[in-house]
Each structure stands twice: as C-alpha cells, then as structure tokens.
Length: 420
Image 1 (cartoon, rainbow, N blue to C red):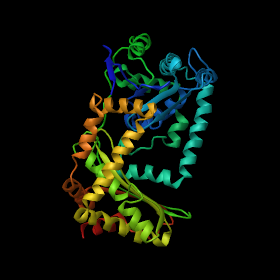
Image 2 (spheres, rainbow, N blue to C red):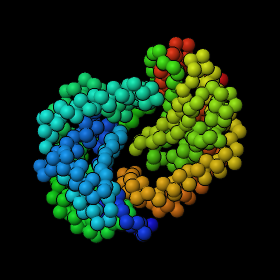
Image 3 (cartoon, rainbow, N blue to C red):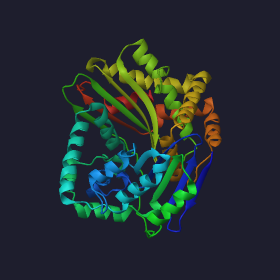
Image 4 (cartoon, rainbow, N blue to C red):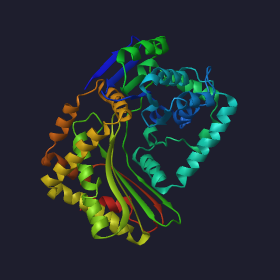
C-alpha cells in the first residue's frame, strides 16, 4: 500500500492512498460523531445535520452545491451511523481540489436557513415513515433498542418523530459545536490523489480550527430484552441479537468467520437447513457487527406465521450444533469469502477511502492488508467452536418480532432452549 498520514497540530488528520492507473478519486471527511454521541433530547440530530449540510452554505446555495460536483461528472453524498457521519465525493483526478473545497464548505459554513430546515424536516419525517413501513428495516431498530435499552446505542439513527419535529437552528449549531471538532475529523482520499497537495489544501481549510475538549461517550451496556409488535403482514419477521466482541477485541475476526459460516452465504448452515432443506423462508442470514466497545451477532429471517416457531427452534439448534461439529472446511470457506470480499472491495477507491478512515477511527493507524489477512488466517476451528458455544448458550440475547407473531416463542422460551 502507498498509505500516507499527516496530522495537524489541532488533531485534524489527512490520510490518503494513491492507486496507480486510476483517473478518479474518492475523497471525504469522516466525523467521529454519530447517533451514539447524542443526548436523549438530541436523538436524530446527527442525521438531521447530515441532511442540512447540503442545504446551503455562506458561499453556495443547495443547488450550487449539487451543480458544483455534477457539472464535472462527479457525485456527492453522506451517511450517518451510530458512531460516524461521513461526507464524501467521487470525481475525476483534476477535480479533486474542487471536491475537497465543496465538502469543506458544507462542513464549515452551513447557514441552517429556517425555510430549508422546515423542508428537510418534512423529508426526514417521510424517511422515518418509510422505515416504519419496511419491516426488515424497522425490526433492527427495535432489536437495537432491546439490546441496549436506555442507552444511546439503543436509539434509532433517524430519531424519534417528536424529536425531529422540534429541532431548530440552535440545536444543529449546538451539536456542531460539541462534536464537529478537528480532532474528531478524518480527511480520507484514495485513487488518483496527491497526498502533499491534499495536505496543503486541507491546511487552508481546516488548520485554523481550534482543538476542542471533545465529548464523553457513555460506555455500552448490552442488556437484552424482547420486542413483539403484532401487525397484519404477509410475513412474520424475526431478529435475534447476541452480544459479541467489539472491533478492537481479539475475537472480532472469529465472530465474523462464525457468522459467515452460520448464515453469511448460500452454503452456510442456516441457509442450507432452513431455506434449502425445509423451505421455511426466502431470506435468512447471520452477521457480526461491532462498535468501539461492544458488538452484536445478529440473525434475521422472514417466514409465514405458522412456520415461525419451527424456524426459531431450528436457528437455536443450529447455533448449538455449530459449537460441537463446525468443520474445518466450513471455516476455510468462510475465511476465503472474508478475504475475497475485503480484497475485491478495495478495488474501489470509495471503499479504500472509507477503509482508511475506519482504520484510523479504530486503531489510530492503517494496518497493512497483509496484517489483516494474517489475523483472519490465524482464526482456528477451536476458536470458532468456543465462540459458537458462547453464542449458543451464554451470550446475552435480545429478540424482536414483527407481524403475525402472536404465537411466536418468547425470549424466555428461546433462552430455555439455548440452555437445554
């Protein structure tokens, strides 16, 4: 890799990776401030702020922001997670300075016009409504709430409707002042980029920012619980979460390999047993996610109401069986899929830029790809079986059910089956 990193005296970081042969670049600012960093009365403000960033600055109107990038054939976008908000663009090599200027402009010079706030409030309320009408979206918000009750990690990223209705300019400015500080920002770029040129331009755009005190983060508490929402739908939706390792924990790659072997592909255990052999569902999967101090191994499936109990029981039984008879060939397949997914994804400059920012967020450095692959290769069958045993019987659990789920097993019943 040709990764280069520069840190300014105020804590602002610039990281880039030149990719020979490319004529385009991905560039963005990753702000270490997401839904997790909101107080309860601020729930949804990080996402609202992401929307407002494109609604006008002191230099550009909302239309001019869009036209500046699209006139040169590029695109610009943003997203909010529970721990990060990202603002990024993809442009041709010659337009990289323009892209950085626009991204810096929307971060440093937003006007938060009152009329635009009202327009975007309506857009976000529609987004919330759309999520509520999408069962396999909203069920994960409810699952998160049960996993981390009365904690920032348990709140929805979009925010509660009543909170969103009340946000004003002062709320947006307050969150920016609290969380959008230079030591919480990473400028990441990949593709046809010149690191020294990026640093020179970034100095003019961000070096004058004063390092802030930074806000506190409430430690994670995975508690667990059950959410059951009965509604007349075509399918019954089931989601299960088990506490797993955080993304700095030694076991994170073990958890990812286990989740892949359990339900991460067409050849996985859950897919083969639940869908292919028994025909109980169309969609079923398992995945391992992580935060800075906690993690979740999640299973999701949608099925007919009369088949839900059987599906839940088989899921628990397959998790228990994995602790005893997970095979080496399954681990090798999951390992190969992880490595291939990592390496193929990094053929995209956008994915590379995101990885640079994420690695700095997690480790404070960007590990060589060989180091990451070595960690994946170091996971043994014994490691996976031991983690499978923990997930099957001991890890704290949360469950969410949505649809015609009146007769579905309770979390208590699920726990009893885990312990049997």
